[in-house]
Image (cartoon, rainbow over all chains, first blue to last red; front, side):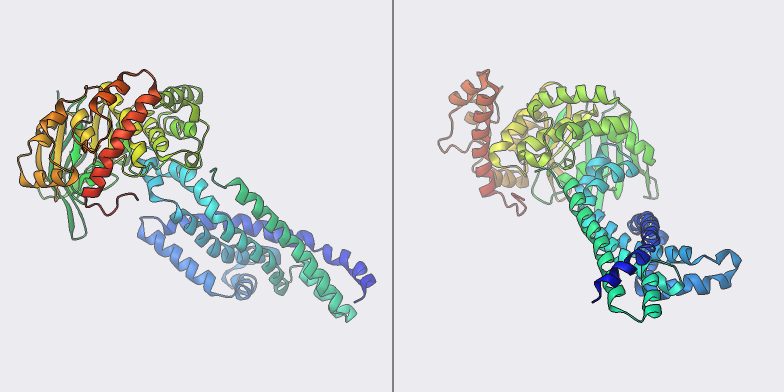
Length: 218
Length: 324
């Protein structure tokens, strides 16, 4: 392996870091909101909401992310010009829907793991459903949600690399360009792997911190 | 004046399983009513229907004049609006068998949460009330502890303070000593007894026959979702009229209660009925502990007594969920 070459290409690949991080941040933002809504819908007493949530999870967990990205970028515009998305937006859309399907199950598992007595105690005290969800159930569910939630986050971080296929100039695309221009694969791929590892390591450390924050005081 | 709580023909079924078959119960202001009965008889379901944690299948429930649910001529149930139900719940302080304290909040936060969220009480005011309430249940020194840092008895007393913080008209106690170690039941019962003496209206589902005999004005014996027998606490427990009541009391107490037990000891300590007579503290010893100003000594004596009572009861009672 040519270490000098790595030194030369690393800055080029890192030019895509900002886009990778943006893809990740936007996708996490949307998928967290949507995932929580889907989880609450799934637990709702209103049947059509439950069905929608189940159908959503079934579809977006059942279709490859690659396909979702192709759809968002190539197929959606067929519906009309308003759906003509930039590569970046199409990628955020695909990643958000895909991640939300997984996050909704993380949220739901956390919420149903909270003892039903907690909800009852809150209800018996006259609290509204919204308040007891926000102040009583979710803070306790958080402890249980964190591991699968962060697992999904790590997955999404890595899957931003798939945005390459719809020409989003994130790190993987830049690395691929180097490979085809310089006819050298080992160094760009090695560099890329190191950067992704660094990014996911940050998430692993964040998970430690979150778990400590939400640990029950015994 | 109309009764504070009025239940008429209350029925509840879960699928094919009929739990309540038409319960009638009226509770006046200041009255303490104990509900006893075998496991699965529907005692707990009555309380849970009363604040609509369970939706009744039939019958009428009225709290302080507000109809919570009623049945029309065709037998169709009608329920109060969510808002009205929440309003009534403010008047019904519920204490659960398994405490159900919020584990992510300190004792103090547990007590102030609902007054602030539901009644809009300012934090400062809520905290000062909470400190008073925690003190009244003997836990002012535990205000900043989390539930899991406390014993079962302490958690249950915090739960009582939490319910009282809403300034309810009625307190509902659902087998509140059943999930604590027997030696800790006494401290909970003592708090409840004090409440009763202060004139709180209480509906108590319990296996503590001594407590039922000593503190309640009225005892209901429930079996198979029906009130089998009810009346003055001492009369129901000492001279049960129905065979089923007799059989139940016989099973719960190692032997049928005797007059001499009822006469022994002073009223302040109470819990006469169920002493199992196996060389526990004598009435005299307990009376002395009762007049001892030191709270701890009194609690210790109560605890010891209740532990014996419960041991006896547990041995006799067919209660598969005991100790869970």
